[in-house]
Length: 113
Length: 113
Image (cartoon, rainbow over all chains, first blue to last red; front, side, top):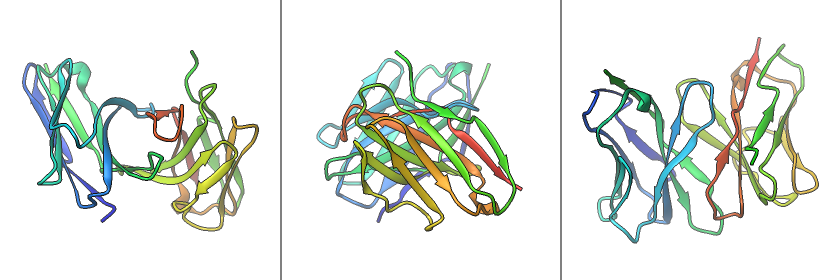
């Protein structure tokens, strides 16, 4: 119940295309769902986050879609660029006052020019 | 301002030795987290500090692992009698408060030979 399942493990997209990464969870107590971007040799950086009271959040080319009934959420990267090539992690946090993040296994995205 | 810093950036140690990993959080951040990232894996929660106390140590894998935080700032993660399975990147994150966004440091890559 504590797991967050992320797919695909790796993704190759052409420049200008849409990258889609999916995550699923079981624990309905999760109430915070961030996405992190990690470049090689760096720590993860918060990209965008959503709470379950909204179904979609958009920031620039990045959009989170959230389906509470299906317990799924996804990251869409529009107009993907080579600079977006990185590993992306979804995560979920349990309610209870602090954000103990449970991470997915990560998706390695390569955007080809 | 300065981000989360960690030292050393790389540590190679022999099996059975003790190691200390240091984290300097963002100034003023009261919450501090340690995570472990094994090769090709997602991040695994280790411990959470609020101020100097650690209300959640549930992720520490064994009693060889311990952590402390002093002055509500710097934290040290200690691994005693290191084993090869301890090899991983150890990441520290801090946040303004327990329910705020987490900012990660660059990590310490630990290799146990």
